[in-house]
Amino acid sequence: MIKHIVATDDDPAIRKILQIMLRKENYQVTSCKDGTELLSALKAGSASVDLVLLDIKMPGLSGLELLELLRRGYPRIPVIMLTAFNDLDTGMQAIRLGASDYLAKPVRREVLLECVARVLEETALKQEEVAEKVHYIAHQKELETQLQDALMALKSTTLATLEAFTETIEQKDPYTKGHCGRVRAISLAMARELHFSQDRIDTLVGGALLHDIGKIGIPEEVLNKTTSLTKEEFDLIREHPIAGERIINHIDLFQPYRAIIRSHHERIDGKGYPDGLKGDEIPLDVRIVSLADAFDAMTTCRSYRSALPAEIAVEELKLFSGTQFDADLVNLFIDKEIYLL
Image (cartoon, rainbow, N blue to C red; front, side, top):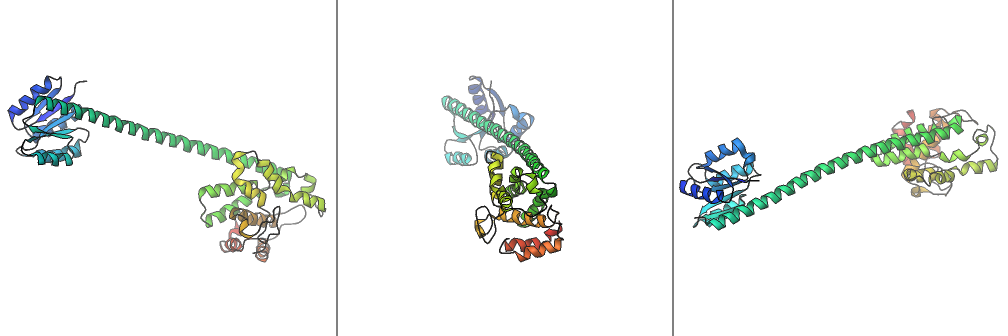
C-alpha cells in the first residue's frame, strides 16, 4: 500500500526537492507552503495521511506550534521535523514535544529515505500494538461478561438446588414447614446489620437453608413424636449435624456451608454438640444461624408443644445469652427488633 506523506515548508525549492526524492521511492506526496495549508489538508483527509514532514521555522504558525496542534488533533500521524543545520537544539526540543525524529537541512537523499522508512515502520508497529491492546481489552471485557453470566447462572442453579434440598427436609417434618426459610431470613437480617460482604452473605444464606439437612436420615416417627424422646431417639437426633455434613461431603458447591451444617448446635459455653466447641471456636456465621434456628424453633408449633409468643422467646434468648448464645448477637437481635420479622 502506497504511503501518503505531507511535506510542509515555506521554501518552494525545498518542497520540490522533497517531492522528487520521495516520489521516486513510490510515496504519494502532498506539498504545503505553511501551517494553514497543512491544517486544511489534514481536516479534509487526515485518514489518508501516513506521515508529516514539517519545517520548524515558517511564517505564521511555527513548526513547534503546529507540532503541538498535530499531537492533540492527530496523534496517530507521526511527524518528522526539518531544522536548519545550525539549530539542532530546536530539533531536540521538537523530539521532546512529540516529534518522531528531526532532519537537518539541507537533507541528503539517503538520510531522508532512511528516516522516513524507519518512522513509518515504527509507527506501523505501534499501531499494531495499540490494535492488539484494544482487541485484548475488548476480549477481556467479553470474557468478564461471560464469566459474570456464568456466575449468575451458577448462583441461580445453586439457590434452586438449596431450595430443593430444603423442601426435601421439610417434607420429612410438616411441623417445621418454612423453618429453614425463616432461619435464612433472620440470619440475612443480622448479616446486613453486621455489614457482611455479599460472598459471606451467600455462604450464610446457603448454610441457613441447609443447616438441618441431616434430618433427612432420621425416621419420621422420631421427628414427629409427640411424647418424650427416649435416650436412643435423642441421641439419633443429635447425630443430624454430622449426618448433614456427610450428605454434602461430595457436593463441591455446598462446601462453604460445612461449618454451619456441622456446628449449628454448638454453644458458647462449650456444652453443645457434636464437638463441644465454645466461644470464638464457633465461627460467627454459625453463631448467627444457631440463634436464628433457636428463635424460630421456639416461636413455631412443634409436634411436642405449641409455639411461644415472640416476647417469651426473646426472654429465653436473654436468659441464655452468654451461655448458649453469643451475647453480642442477642443484643443486636433485640436492639434492631429482628424478632419482629
